Image (cartoon, rainbow, N blue to C red):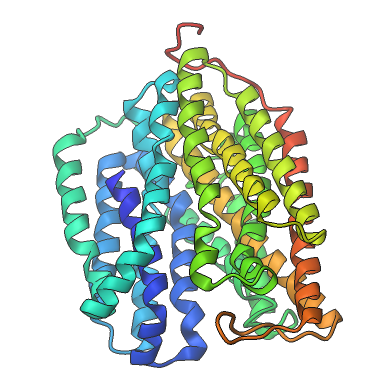
Length: 466
């Protein structure tokens, strides 16, 4: 939990300090890379951490991830220009890529599946707490000290987590192969990074017909094809082919990718909708999304207790996706019909509650269906597909919004708040476009619901009904 909190707190604190960082270092044109470099590095390294954790154990890999993250944090605080900051944020991301999958793997190692739901339900609590505290702490630290300390603050928190893990986490006696697939690691990381660059920057910083997009697309295809051939020839590949022979893993990966594609693609526009369409201030727009986090935390904890009592996870997940589908549909209809907060806010709460029934239980289902030797890479790959779906959702919804604005000849609203007037015609275009994005999210969740129907329910190991 301390490791997850360290990663989540860093992201929310740094986001608050970005304006001050740009004012000090300059490089406004490269501001997005401060976030993009971190996200790309963390997403691309997730599968690698899972495989290495299966080979060398959880303890060495969590220390490696924390060491890279804390070294990157210290160097970010020492950065003298934007280029250095971007490079060191990538190093931070390399470490952070191991936090979520390794934390989930370690929880799976020490908690029986039947009891795991209660502990997994605490993960959203960490993200909720850091999501609320991070912006406040970021502003206080930046004003009282400087933006450098938004990175330095990771060091004492990380030291406490490092010490706690060193004392509490026992060394495993691993019996798996210790042969590292170096070529496979390079091919997998290279193909994933190339694909993520296209998804993250294509259509925004790089035009779709640009040389950068073409080169990265070709690299992703060539390296991915080479990897597919390579993993069939080596005895202990970085991406075991038999992992994709597990039905539970395949269905869970598709469901998580589709769910997060709809979730991230739509909810990223909540602040824009509240500020441009509803006329809220930037500060209050953030508070208006709190019900989603409350629903997520509450349902995660309740579903964990139910899982411990019944040992059944599929019915809870189906109910969660049905709730998310109703919420997405209500939000799309309510935005288009100009309904007020009395409809929008309960739907936001329902959306969070539905997702809280799906995410922790899906991780438990995959871990329960995989042998110990594949638990690490399976958990990490599920986390990767979840992140990949979110990235696709954000990219796709951004493209949909841009096309809608362009079709109506509307310029993007650069700022909102006191003293900024938005034309009624512009408000109408934004309302219609964002409602359409939530409608697309509803379709994605519906598709995930259909796929989830085929998920087998494997009895949880250690449960009395097993």
